[in-house]
Length: 471
Image 1: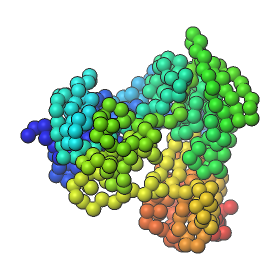
Image 2: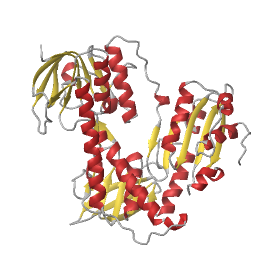
Image 3: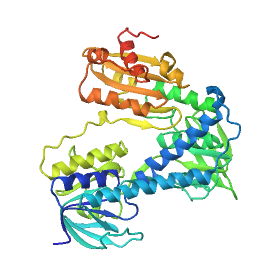
Image 4: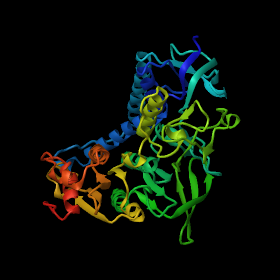
């Protein structure tokens, strides 16, 4: 029957659409239920449009430093409307691309708000903005239902975003004008990326972080390097600080900030971005009635993305951290292959890289030095600075470093942490090495091309074993 499926996926974000395509490749009849944006948050209001903004910020940075490269650029300026228009155009292109891929793979798109009324049954209520060719609201059935509803910005009591003075990433991605001054609550990936963008656009930026370290999930040494670079650019940073109250003015906000040492101060700015994390979209899905187990706002799953209720699966941000698009995509594949009866492999979360596209970029995989020690490993640590790399110096990007952590007993690579230009492109080399269980000997014997920034990766491994050449 038309409304009967092997798999219904609720949400068309990176996890949902990738899982749908993989399930379709495996011969299953698949439908995706979406209520807002084909492709979900990532291509529409997250990863992709944010990187488009940051590219504009990078270019204005280089133009303003043209003299450093022996060039003359006398007139510079920011057309924020043009910057946003480019970003939104790219977002639309990516969303359309997802729609094309779903159609190509014969995945039905069902438009509306989904509720699981019973195992194998989904009721879809109408929502606005249905794309051409989407199936309407109604009752649908499926042997397997995959929850891929993603997450939304977390709101703190008393500091709820109002879209005018207090922004989430939605408003920050499409500003009508550049605020002269900006407060950012939270120094995770979203917070520091917007700090880099708005600083390049001309804003006076202050980051307020509750924990003692910015980029809290990163290695302390890497985070400290990034902080110094941010502060060198003129970004103000308060760590161990809490926004206890916000007072809205006619066209500004005033934040009362308390620090760990018991002191307090008042900061006023044109706008405040709340970047204090996200929370899973688990509401209004019928999960409580079905008895689906949740924990701290996320659906609880096993290694194959199964919930405690047979036939109901969950993937991506709604299934818990790390809340990253590439993690969601791989969970989509795992769920699809498990549903199809294939030999699916549970994902090792230690192998998931983290990338932050601020200036400088930060990338990592595996254990930090602190976590490795806490886990009881005897470790060898290698470090190599970009200043010792000819390509980095030639690029004018001599500030950065690579840090590698090895098990001293076995030579196993436990973690890699990078900060500097384009390290988000370099990290995959270490990800592959960890997945292939590569030892330090194999990495040392690998030939890296010259001149490339990737040579810093090799030198860091050499440094861990007292063999670094260029430092």
